[in-house]
Image (tube, rainbow over all chains, first blue to last red; front, side):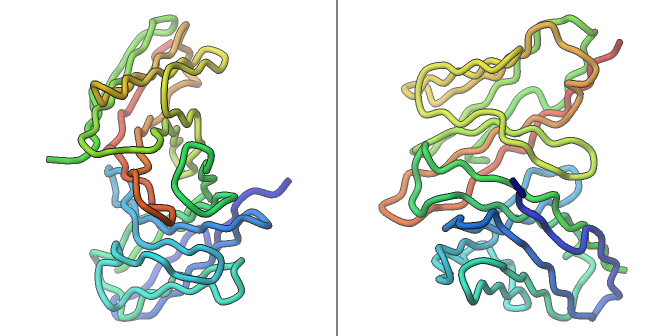
Amino acid sequence: GAGVSQSPRYKVAKRGQDVALRCDPISGHVSLFWYQQALGQGPEFLTYFQNEAQLDKSGLPSDRFFAERPEGSVSTLKIQRTQQEDSAVYLCASSPYGGAGPYNEQFFGPGTRLTVL
Amino acid sequence: KNEVEQSPQNLTAQEGEFITINCSYSVGISALHWLQQHPGGGIVSLFMLSSGKKKHGRLIATINIQEKHSSLHITASHPRDSAVYICAVTRYSGGGADGLTFGKGTHLIIQP
């Protein structure tokens, strides 16, 4: 079956532009996560949705970052007034259930590589 | 101090060698994950474990909950095993699903 997909795969933006990154999770998956991975680093948590509810946005680095999942499936991560430090790979993952636990494996998308000039 | 520490950061070995990558964590967890990331960004989940040992092909993952330590082993390593291996944990929480907390990864190169 189809895995997690993300679009675009690559995005180049000029500093100050707004960007929108899309994540299509595995159909029926309850949980959706966004992560940011800077070059040479491990990913870092940004935000988490359980269905359409954004239960945790503690990892969003500033109020320029906004995420939504209005119908509990597709999610969009929006970055306003992009800065050079926003350059990173943005990863989306989904998992079948809500709740933490060893049963709730996360499935990752290929990521969107954002470069801000 | 990072909550998830991996070692080594970089590892170069010859084809056929037995590989061990270590992970230590300092928080309460409900699960530990070993992930593989190839150039280009895609992440594949190798193992998710909360106790004991799991084996899949040439890969073995172990976890010691008391010592807060896990190891990933690769037997009969092959150049196609070259990738970044990332340890991540699901922190134990009272409700909801916390995002994963990741180590910085181990960059493995297997030379033919």
